[in-house]
Amino acid sequence: MIHSLLDLAPVSEGQTAANALANTLDLARHAEALGYHRYWLAEHHNMPGIASAATSVVIGHVAAGTSTIRVGAGGIMLSNHAPLVIAEQFGTLATLFPGRIDLGLGRAPGTDMATARALRRNMTNTDQFPNDVVELLNYMGPVDESARVRAFPGQDTNVPVWILGSSLYGAQLAAYLGLPYAFASHFAPALLEDAADTYRSTFRASKWLDAPYFMMAAGLCAAETDAEAEYLRSSQVLAFARLRSGRPGRLPPPQHDLTEVSALDRQGVEEALSCAAVGSKATVRDQLAALIARFKPDEMLLTGMIHDHAARLHSFTLGAQAMRELA
Image (tube, rainbow, N blue to C red):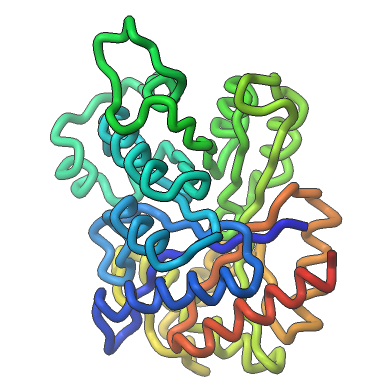
């Protein structure tokens, strides 16, 4: 089973964005040595606890500091950008790091509506996402001398494009266009099974892909014992609860006492983060095996935020070991 890593470049309390970006490169090198296939970064804005807002810049930083692992976006929120700009950015990345760049595309803004307005300047109720995806594919496809607008660099780089989603919309679009599909089950697992079935059953072969290719994301928090892993995971539980209540911040240290989060909020957070493997290596291996057996992904995308960088490195080490044992 191919396994990859999604990083949000978390900024822990007591640290800075510079620390977070240094940790991201360190983790990417670690992931490369451990055999992870891809290292993806995500676009989020106006969030003090995430340092990957300028996603293409961070991808370049990671790709320059590694040598073999694929590096990409999981994803770029295309509603925030002109397709030509993204084609130029990722065409440049693919030119600098040939054969190593991926481009995952999301439809949501990746932020609140006030920030979305600041990003886009112009708001429209018309859903341009499908048209924007096709426009972007054309910019990075074979050279078309007759086209009035072309991406330089970009044309003929054929950067692999993925559709990302947490609903049936992305599954339907990925199937219709014949593109690989990644589901954001690490924070929105409710429609995972339906989305996977929809994608596989309606997929149409294309010049990009002969058969459906489905990747699911899962949270990971691994440690020497189940109890230690649950304790380390409390940082992400608390951060996610604060985000859902409109109080985004830096990643807090782990806590035994989570009374700050009401029982109702805790239930919602646990449901949102339920597609996860948390525990010792043996526990994580069994939980990942159950997810793979149930949803049958072609690839697993593991992600997880832990306050202490060394503990996070160890978590992804145990995760890679568990995936190798499953293989």
